[in-house]
Amino acid sequence: MSDYSSFGSSSLDSLSSSSGFESSSRYGSSGGQPSSSQMMEAVKQQIAVANAQELLSKMSDKCFKKCITKPGANLDNSEQKCLAMCMDRYMEAWNLVSQTYTNRLNKEHSMQGGSGSGVPSGLM
Image (cartoon, rainbow, N blue to C red; front, top):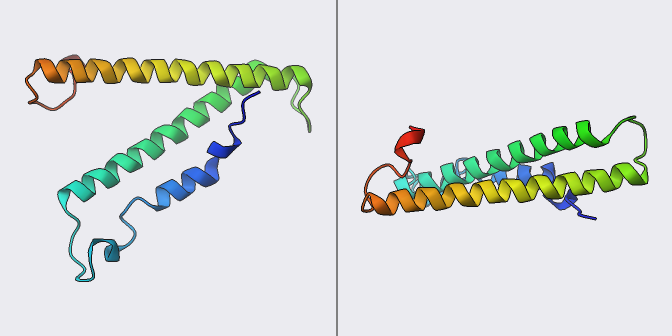
């Protein structure tokens, strides 16, 4: 049975609090502005956290609706097994879609000769 508790909201909260926007001391004692690469990294990190939160929310909602027939204080064995299998399948499907999308972006980016926005023309 899979244990997704280590990927709970507390770890997501700690990720979001380390976005890089909360402290100017991170960019030096002179209080200077972050460089564009630092800003880009902070934005990428925030997007990754938001995507993880959305994934967990959707997975929880869909698997709860599918597996929990009579909500109560405890889960019976069949509900636990159903939730574990549902979450595994959901994660596998999400990873496959993510990997396929990334491969498509990389392929289209290389076909453009490394220039452009990095977003496929059909998705803009």
